[in-house]
Length: 113
Image 1 (cartoon, rainbow, N blue to C red):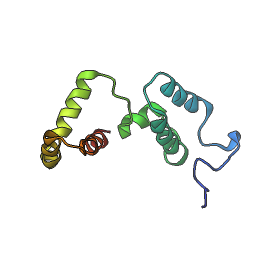
Image 2 (cartoon, helix red, strand yellow):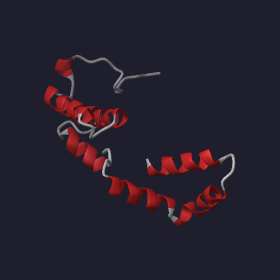
Image 3 (cartoon, helix red, strand yellow):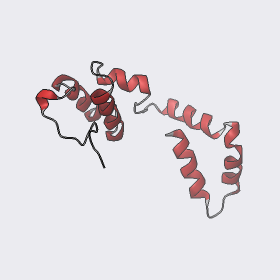
Image 4 (cartoon, rainbow, N blue to C red):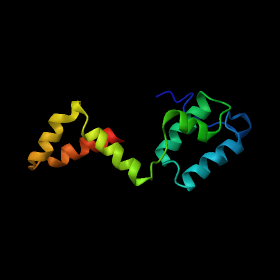
């Protein structure tokens, strides 16, 4: 596999498109819980390959990559996904219960994520 252009391609810090200030801001966002590590990897990819100037916070906001910790917001998000008309059959299957209910739970979690 050709890794050129990917984050796995080693490059000297002096030639990196991501400077220390922006990288530090990204690390701080992970440390304070604003981003998960998987979200941070996405932000870093954008910083490295596409957006050479924006701060990590702006990139995360633009792409909707933020940890939601407000319970009211999470409840509204979950309710909206579960009650979407296109998910009606999954909701009915969930209400019926059964051995395969975990698959429906995974379906809804995936949609919410």
